[in-house]
Image (cartoon, rainbow, N blue to C red; front, side, top):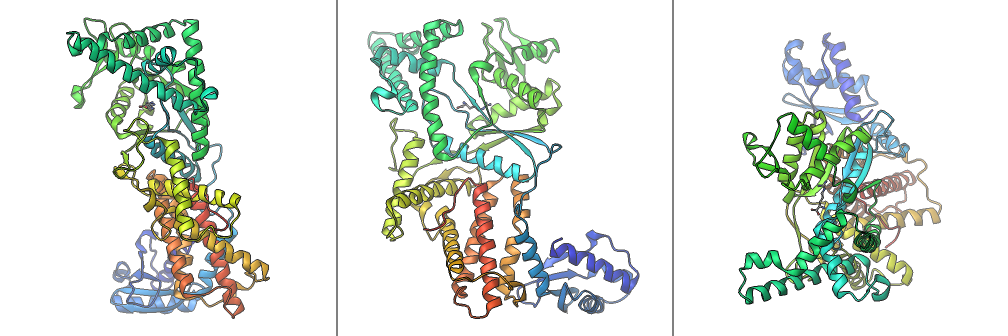
Length: 596
Ligand code: ARG
């Protein structure tokens, strides 16, 4: 039971004893005591005045007097200001709270049981024609953190990825490789597989552009040239052959996708990202056709003269949506309708979160709407976690294509910048190269993850590598550094035989009470982050806690403190702060170092 709950119960009992009043819990309004008054928690007296038949000042005084006498384990002093009763919570209550926190190895976390809701979280979901980019980084970090936060709120979680491994995009890379590649492989070129395939996608586009220009120069209209360019025809031919199971095309497709997966796996590993279930579009792209049939029979969809099938959503304020082309082939939406049905059937999901960029807001709005029209009551449990673009400051890190920033390049750049900045500050002095490498990786990635996750996903953001590593700012490295610093204090304490024994005898300072309060707010913070699907809530909490501790440590030494019980208490506080920082950062997928 936390202090508010204890106080509420005590106030209810007091009102009963004093005035024979049976007061419901929600009538007991507790507030943080205003800075200018003495006390920790304030009870609003007005709601009890009528039944007591006395003025608010008097009721406040009687209630305060009673609490101080009869509940001295909770309330140690009181004062009344108008209709507000300011209570000073006893030292032992705060110590008790600290006891409870430190005794809970899963502090802040709810355990999932067999009956817990099952939540699927789909994230990443790349196409296989190019490497992951900065947008995927935001996506991956959000999805992975959300999965941890949702699990920490007592849900079962399935982390899901759907790889768009078939279609014209990969055929373009395949065709360019076939005509330009001379048998190049990741092994022969030393290129990471996804980069190699991405380079051929770029090569295709260059080839295609050249062909279009030539056709236009020869007198053809641009629009026609864009359709007739031989490379595009060849890629379309490949897609047709793939759909008909042509052995050679399928073999090449498998080989090149295999290269891409090796590359993706490396990037995922670097980011600390994993999945419980991976779907491949090649295995699901035909799903959804049966649903279209069902919708036609139910009169929800309509067929046009050319045979194409549409869903008219104009009555819902949206457009008409194509679901099957005239030639019977399916579109992006068809597949998503089918896979949603399949996933809900396979897992009996209670909730399905899709982490996908805001350029697909319309797509997911339509997806939910059509699933609802098809009569699936679970359509309401679909949530599109939409996020905005990430940009880099002008001139930073031009990627190979010149437009998007490559994820691997960014990770390498972050680790490099972490090294530069740590060296400038002398943080790597006297550290072995092996340890320095580990620290720079942790700091570089911590900076990247924290800077992205602290922002509300909906907002477009600017990612500034150097700002993200600033050891004094609202950054991952600042929090990591605070953790390392506490751990080093704890190590020193251990070496010199200082322990937390007897900490409960210490008289607490107001700032120590503030720290205990901050720690005690962690569980509620994790709940809020879970309800709002908001890693940023955890990020803000971790920063505030680290900052608060640093302020405290600046004013009060720990190991130099002479009074044994006070030193023990400070050690205890430091150790719990470090533990909660580690836990909160883990929810963001960020590791914290033992030393730095
Ligand atoms: N691969 C798609 C893209 O890169 C994103 C897929 C999102 N997931 C989904 N179920 N539609 O745009």
